[in-house]
Length: 117
Image (cartoon, rainbow, N blue to C red; front, side, top):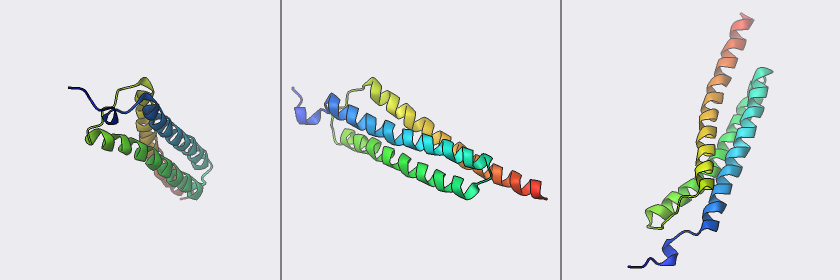
């Protein structure tokens, strides 16, 4: 039994999806670090806005990931490529960094309030 080429994702398609994930999660990571700088200066509104922007970038990366999963669920064969492994790693670590940054923003705010007392 031979597979129909329409059911196999080619290397270029995989690379494009991987680079979309890397681009958007990289943008999010940069924005998160900008938010950390704002937190250190007690610029909490700015930090929260930056974290919201970072989350939007992560959502864009997640859309690329979800499109791949949808293709896979619909029977499309997707070969593993190292660039996709890197992209997934990049996205997951950035998602974790966002969660940590959101908690740190809260803690920085609590610390600032406590030091005013």
